[in-house]
Length: 387
Image (cartoon, rainbow, N blue to C red; front, side, top):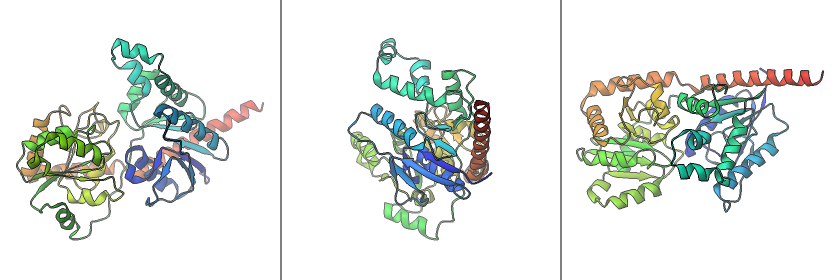
């Protein structure tokens, strides 16, 4: 394939933001080896290790969220209409040749799921809901030289339920890469900074919104575990602080450490003993996959609460909860891993198998295949129109 000019559209560009943003950075890192990429986003993390041409699409923060999304979509379309071979978008709108859906579809939430009658009726006249629905309808519409991609089988199924079985929706799950070995003594040093010893069993949660990713369930489970079990939460510090303050249990709160969102999250994966992810809503779940790459055993929610659960073999590659709010089961799983070295070793090896199936090189290869299909269809369309 010749060197392509690719427009990459997303909300923010930087690994520290997580989710769709980290997906975009990792994919751009692979594609930029052989192609020219320009980033279109509200914000570009200056500490990001991937430095690419950047066009700011910042929108005034005073607007309501639905207006900001609409304005962003309009500006993205205007800036990417010409000059690019492929427009690869991770945002709701209509600018992309490739549209990647990371979250539960809007139409699924408002037209497929069971809702109270009044809430559903009011959505018919809500400018906010109608704006989101309209943007998404244009985004996923079947048309030549266009692909809608889901990041998990769960999202693909929700899209089909929302828009019909005729929707063409390949699934390309996020990838991961094995991290570099951690410097000798780094684990002990970070634990000392946190006020913990090498004998403590540290559970890790990495999330921009810890409450949605299961923090209440984790804290409830922690309360029933011995004192040497600790919890480290990276990201969403204000939300986590408010939650812990309301608990009003100083002994329990002292076993929890909170760290702001950081681009150096790898140092905290390296300091943990296991990863806990009793999420209430994750279309995929990048953090538990990253945790596996660091050799951590993982506990996570079942599908449909966590899309990543579809990619693991329960009991061999991860421990999967029966329900994300089952704190007693979560506590039992945590103790099993802490008390059974053989189980821990088996889960670590199983996790490495999952990591090997999800490389960013393979993810980039699959997107390049889609780009080729789009370019062929565009050429055919142009040829027919010229006849």
